[in-house]
Length: 424
Image 1: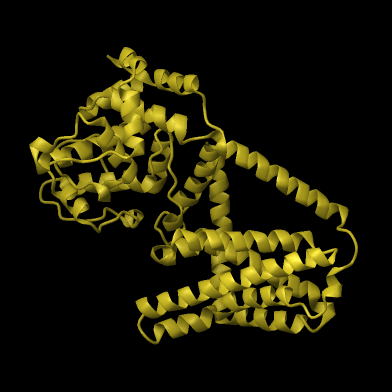
Image 2 (image 1 turned 45 degrees about the vertical axis):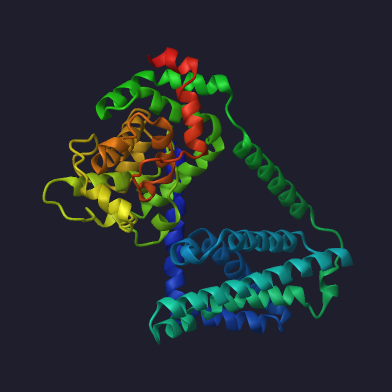
């Protein structure tokens, strides 16, 4: 997986260069690009300049906006229907734009894709302006809006031009070139391979063999945390059987490379990317939250984040505060707060990932026992698995907790004959 992590690191370096240029452009470069684009529309010799600006401001920046900036700055104001609409408009526009237009029907499709993009960009701009006005004091939101105005207006202008082209005959110039056909076929092939890879699931036998292969690691980690080894084994089985693929793990490793590159959370990458990693699909921020809970549970410790690397650790929520104050005692884990690179490396280590899972599950069990010994969930695999999937801020001790689908699947595996035969 180190190769995929390195790819993530290279992407992070490219992003850093782009982000530097994006900030520098606020000093006037974005307005210069806007002026050049509007001027190039009326000067055919400058059409290549206009296309370059369209690609930069209409493709590169919107792509990074959807992947990074929106998640970081507007995540709480982005319902999933809006995200789906944004990606649909982005893909429809650029697929249709890349295919060109060789017939009147092609031109109409292109115009409809551009009109969809036009509407979605407008909705997004209004949402962003409203959030800025609501969360930023005046005149700070006005200054930010003036700096970033071209980032919204240039995509609007390019979409409007394609939606209402005054000279549609410019797009009717015969069949696409061979290279364009080749690129389109390669893109379709890669999309198909990626889709199949993400949908493929391991067989029942493969999942069982995975559990058997890590039997010693499971027993060792469970013994350290005073847990039933069948709980860890069942989580591994359900995760491997229903939630992971080879392609998915590769993409998660690339995302982890991006995440760990933003060590101090200065570039927004750590906010946008928090992938599930390793055999047991643990998020790095979840692991760092567990470290922080343990750190704050020590005697005479107040709620405190160990370093800037822990900025993504959530501090809000009654459950988290009660966890931090619970008498957790000695738990396995790093003796000192680990940095992002150390956390990623340990989650991808086949032995350490079981210790992380046991560490996290033991925190849940200890938290409920400290709240009320009669509410102990240490022998409730379906509840511990549910909390394992939902996260720390969903841990609210109560007398009659309910399991979710993941918890019920883990319980079924926990009670299976082959699991008892392997661990009892």
